[in-house]
Amino acid sequence: MFTKVNSKVVSVDIGRTGPVIARRGAMLFYKGDVHFQPHQIAGAGGMGGGMPGLGGMGGMAGRMLAGEHESTMIAQGHGEVHYGFLGIEVHVVDLGAVGGTIRVEASRLLAYAANLQASVVSVASQGGGGGGGGLFGALRNAAAGAVTGQGMFTTQLSGPGSAVLLGHGGVFELEVSPQKPPVTVDPQAFVGSAGQVNTSLRSAMSWRNVGRTGGEAMQLECSGQGIVYVQASEEKL
Image (cartoon, rainbow, N blue to C red; front, side, top):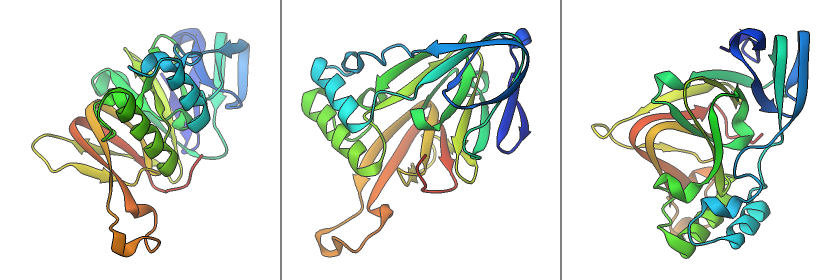
């Protein structure tokens, strides 16, 4: 669906593939009769609904700690649209090849097929985060998100189609399997995951080295079955 023009730009013929949703400001240029209008991901307006036990408090906490989500635009019509963002490298993912579902940080998502089912879900619902369930588990996940730069919520895409991820220095894929040791990632380099991947945030810091460690003090352990997407940098978007 999406074609890489170079390492930082993708193109898509929406007359052939159907509408495309992309973050606001990502459209570089287009050819043909294309129309753009604002779009909202399901759950973005009431974020607490994706976090059991929090209700309205979850929505407030999500907005405070992570922001709602990236503003998006839907492109419809007939023509070829080119997308890119801040000269950051792009990575195209075919969801059909990775189990049909991916979860990605909203800031790392450039564009995706409009036929995909998109929703904003709680990090706690990933079966990871290390916080456990309920109110206190959700709050621990929120605190971890504030520390590492990851949010309390993430974007989930499901169905047949493609999505384009963003990553400083490029994005590479790491396989996660029950037959292999867990993959441990710097949280600021984490882009997203596909399949049944559980994430657990843990500290590698002891009281002896408080104030002496860098970003490696907090680590994201990924286990289960699937793929983890990592950017070649700790730089935030």
